[in-house]
Amino acid sequence: MKVEIDSAALADAVAWTTRVIDARPAQPILAGIRLEAADGALQLSAFNYEISARHHIEAGVDEAGGALVYGKLLADITKSLPAATTRLETADTTMTITSGKSTFTLQLMPLSEYPDLPSVPAMLGQVDAQTFVQAVSQASVAVSREENRPVLTGVRIQFNGDSVVMTSTDRFRLSRSSFSWTPVDPDVDTTTLVRGSLLRDTAKSLDEHQNVSIDFDTENPSLLGFENAGRVSTSQLIDGEFPAIDRLFGDSYPIQAVVNRQDLINAIKRVSLVAERNAPIRMTCSGQELVLSAGSADESQAKESLGLDMDGEDITVAFNPMYLIEGLSAITEPFVRMKMTTAVKPVEFNGQQEADSDESMDYRYLLVPMRYNS
Image 1 (cartoon, rainbow, N blue to C red):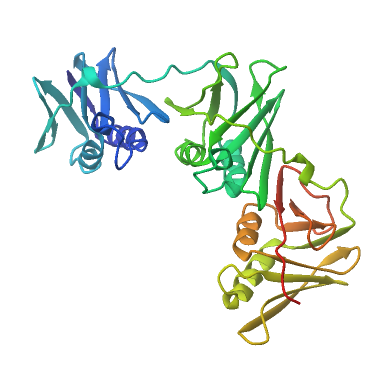
Image 2: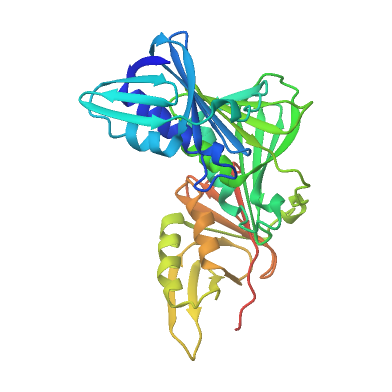
């Protein structure tokens, strides 16, 4: 293999591809990044049995061929190359990297031992990247860290016609985002469950100026694929039944209150400073005032009040302050509507553009209250 390539493009492609390589791979061979030069392009790929990454960039190919080298080392080298152009050349058991007056020689790994990457499923539909990234960020708020319950570490994605709904839950809260997209089949109706950490990682690495194609084979539902700006990823799906959580949303909410979102987040952060670990923060809605409080008579205490627009009876609910902040931070609108039934039933949070406008249902955050001492 003999290739001449733009150094910046190479560094970017190697960094993106090697992000899927684990710090401690299950097998030593999975520490490698595969390079294949042919037809004016350099193909890069990496795999860890759960997620795969493939990228291709333009290159001057003097001699076609393939190589497998340690991915993290190649990433460190390529991001520090001094010249605008880099030359890659393999011979026997080594690959030489030349850039300006710098030369690196890397030992090759056995290419024949590298596992075959999974086939990319057919395209299911596409959406603009910014919409996808925001939806993933919102939907993954409630992803569980309990590895002993794999289904709770996932995000359920429901494709129904031109609508996509992403949902996660850790049993204490539920996070759901919805968006419109362009399906290949307007009658598509299918559901997948993908690990939240993999979905977040994919979203973070997207070029937000281009669309995202989502790939899925309903006849062989084991992989979800993502294509964007010449980059292709696949993620292994979780095998399991996602909890039946739709019943947790209230049919109606007799108590509703609207408050400035950022003011509420700031107040929660201040008041929760005195809350001991795992202790709740209390929210009392009365008249047109919201009072936040934490602590008890025999320990440090804090209290702060905010104005709000409220309909319904007075109510006091208590929440895990971190769960509250994470859910509110995922809302993009300047105001938040809190919808309640009783002090012990889940509370729904929605964003809205104006204090007196309707709430948006594109993002719904459901949080179960904590019990507290009066």
